[in-house]
Amino acid sequence: MTVDTAGLSAPLGRPATIIAHVSCEVQLADLAIPGIPGTKTITSSFTSPIDPYRARGDQP
Image 1 (spheres, rainbow, N blue to C red):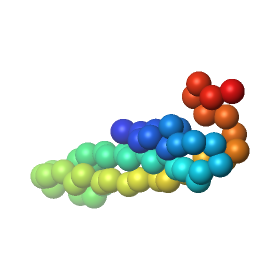
Image 2 (tube, one colour):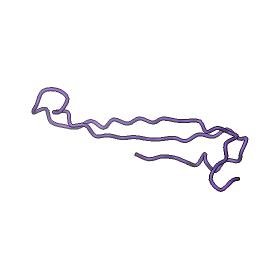
Image 3 (cartoon, one colour):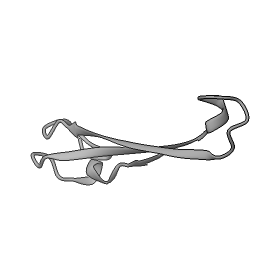
Image 4 (cartoon, rainbow, N blue to C red):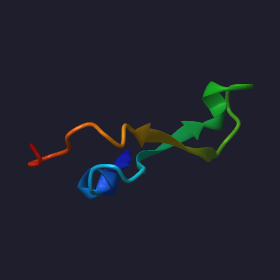
């Protein structure tokens, strides 16, 4: 998992976001018939807005 927090450095009053990226490798044998070889990588991301008027980082 990685989290992009670059939005926290945006000046107050400017809209910004935080983005989380998640990746997971799933064994196919765990999902269906035992003995099926291989894996599948599943990825997703989520973006959350930051309140433009809430203090960020070092800002008072």
